[in-house]
Each structure stands twice: as C-alpha cells, then as structure tokens.
Image (tube, rainbow, N blue to C red; front, side, top):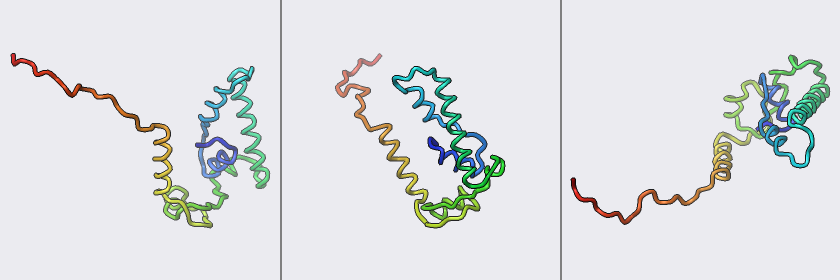
Length: 134
C-alpha cells in the first residue's frame, strides 16, 4: 500500500504511470473535526504529495519526471534475489533478505486480522423429524 511520499517516489522510479493512494483518500474521508470539504482535502493532499515528490527529485538532481520515471536509481536492501529478478529486473541489491515466502506469510497474517475466524451457526438442525414418503 502506497501512503507516503517515499512509496510514491519508489513507484515512480520503477516506472509506474499512475498512483491511486486509496488508503490516504479513505483517511481523508474519515477525518473528524475538519470543516474542509472532501474535495479540498484531496486537493491539499495531492498538492503536498506533488511538492514532496519534487523535493526528492531535486535532492537527486533530477529536474523532470520523465528523467526519474523508470530510471531505477535505487538499490534494493533486504529483498531476496528471486524477488529482485522477478519484480525489479535490473535493480542493484545490497543485502539479501525477504523472499516470496515472507511476503505470503505477511499477507496471510493481514488477512487473518481483517477476517478473523468466527463460529458459524448451524445451517441445519441436528434433530430433524423424518417426513412420510409421498
């Protein structure tokens, strides 16, 4: 889930064309005690995100998004070689680390938190009267 400027910059740096930060928009929708309409909150968020991305690019000496997009100027730290070769082709890596097995465990844990097991009611009574044959 992308919800920070760093996440946006990484996505752009690896070539994404668009970012839809739905968690941020959902959070803006649920802000309490704010008198601004939702459209204005989203506009402010987008403006702040754009400014943050421009700040990161300027620190790297990049003046336009076309030079930044897809450039893969990053080094992967803590990702397994298999993940890098499949998902981030051509990216340099420093330390070997988390692989697909770790990501699947994380996904399953998040799923269990989102959808905890609950006892289900019986669909059919255990004691059922026999019906006469027709």
